[in-house]
Image 1 (spheres, rainbow, N blue to C red):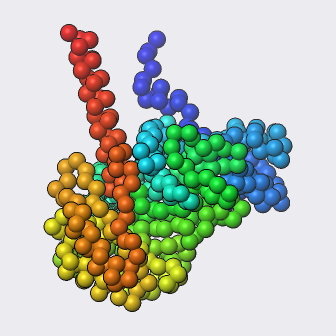
Image 2: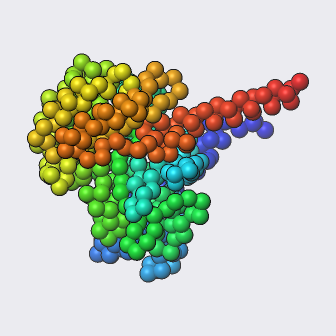
Length: 403
Ligand code: SAH
Ligand code: SF4
């Protein structure tokens, strides 16, 4: 008998069943049509399934008690409610959690994309920092994500999946139990995941359609019900998409400014060569929905000897004059191989004082989760280091075995 070829073996592996967790209403409707459900029933069934997935956090079709058993079985035969897998979890001393997530496979040859997602608890709220892409095609010189080779857009379901995983893990669905090993905000009306920031891996405005679909799911009042005012999308300055973000998503905007003149910003955020500071600030001035009650956040990473002089602090204030702005000074988080350093604390304070005197309150973002490398721009590196160590150990033990 001939040995089966590897290809034939592989082809025999059944394609993974798609997950409905993370789907839009239209996708769920399509799935039901595929099961042969009559058109007149679809809307009602979509509403039921939606409630189970996003309000109750169902992970199994059998939990959907108001759906008849044969239909639950038919759903389970074709679909799952799988979320991204938690490959690793790290909990910082300050309660910050970082998850390495593997996305459900789309087929037998898909190894499953990996991304990171960070949860930052505070006394009365919890912020989830989600990724919009695997890696990033932009190459900001101080950002570790930009050095990653593999890049692809996350689907809307993969973006929503990050929020489902976090709510599962933090006991944030009805009947859920919060983990005992760390700080999770609790109390009457307090939600563990109350805010979402698109500040993980990737440039959200380079994946606009999926981000928009994901925001529609996250903010749907019959499901996850996250207010659009509690969702912030951070961009490095994709000017042509900014108005669409405001009009179609109605979320808060954060802009990664990091420099006050084009010459420097060209080197820090190379996209600046395409959309220079003036164009970026014009787009901010006309950002739909921006007002004193809904300010635009300007992120400014503090790089030692690069962008941190008092003159630059004054230039920043001048530049943002007349804009409904908040300023977030972000201490630079170093990563292996970077040549940048974080500004000294006194320098940051001096910079912050100037910005503060101009009327911007408490602008320094306290670094969170530093002990687990969860802070901005550090996603992925630690895990890669751990993997490299594990590989080395494996190679060593193999070598020993051969001796
Ligand atoms: N691509 C988007 C969103 C993800 S980055 C953007 O650039 O806005 C989220 C924020 O972290 C951005 O302001 C980014 O400039 C900042 N950042 C990236 N690397 C960093 C690092 N090593 N230290 C501190 N902030 C960093
Ligand atoms: Fe991409 Fe944002 Fe990193 Fe720049 S800072 S490389 S846009 S993730």
